[in-house]
Image 1 (tube, helix red, strand yellow):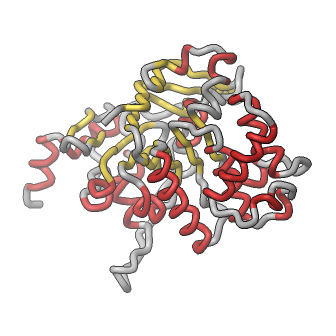
Image 2: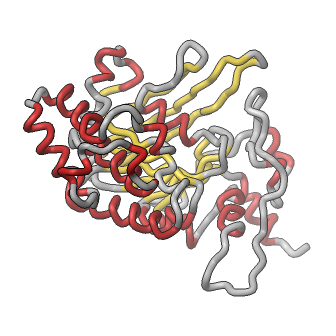
Amino acid sequence: MEKILDIQDLHVSFQTYGGEVQAIRGVNLELYKGETLAIVGESGCGKSVTANSIMKLIPSPAGKIKQGSIAFKGKDLTKMSDKAIRKVRGIDISMIFQDPMTALNPTLTIGDQLTEGVRQHRRVSSAEANKQAIEMLKLVGIPNPDERMKQYPHQFSGGMRQRIVIAMALICEPELLIADEPTTALDVTIQAQILQLFQRIQRETGVSIILITHDLGVVAKVADRVSVMYAGKVVETGTRRDIFHRPSHPYTQGLLHSVPRLDQKGEKLIPIDGTPPDLFSPPEGCPFTARCPHAMEVCSRIYPFHSELSETHAVDCWLQDERAKKYMASPS
């Protein structure tokens, strides 16, 4: 498969009055053409910062990409000028932001907002831009698109606004679509419709998708591969089957145990005790040590090696060390 995105050793920090927040600390990610990669984890783990880094939307001067590379189709986005990256945004890479109401301008019609990007980037006539916008509204399931083009965001429901934001992201036919919590504010029925829409659009257009979410139910439905983030690091990566059937990092296991399952009636949910570490002064070892039921002395002192469990499954955890496996297997 063709690799469309390759992130290597990404470090992103923010300067605040309290000091430097090390939001991303050596993230490695890969995305292949036509696949959906889900990035999951608790709030504050670095999911959205990673997405904004790809788009070069880190607010400066407070935020800074300190180290690493983000290669999109072989070109390092971190080395591009602001002028060059503007030619990538919206055309090659598009992003769907969390709240569709704040992503839409309340003073402009839907038609104006849809056609703005295609007129600017594709240099087409107003008539051609309107035609493309109407076709895109049909693609995302908006009824009566000709009339809807004349309406304003407040005249649409939350689910319809989300569909319009998706249409805006897709109108220039990008090769990579980043969806940041696209179903958070929607009820479960609308969530299901939006997820089905993503799957249908991917089949019809071949777009690659990065889906950022904390909802494992969403991941189970649409993701091909999953990267689990914690405290600015990717601690486990694998196929959907790897993560749901063979979770190997205690944090991944904790996430799965805290989600209700229909096939396990009467089972109690087990929350993850404690809180994430302070990223003003992140720990030297594994950041999950203080909350991990299997923590060992080495965990707090040295960050674990990257362990390849299979061709598709990798984890950063000292429990994969042969010495730890022998200790865990020995009778107490």
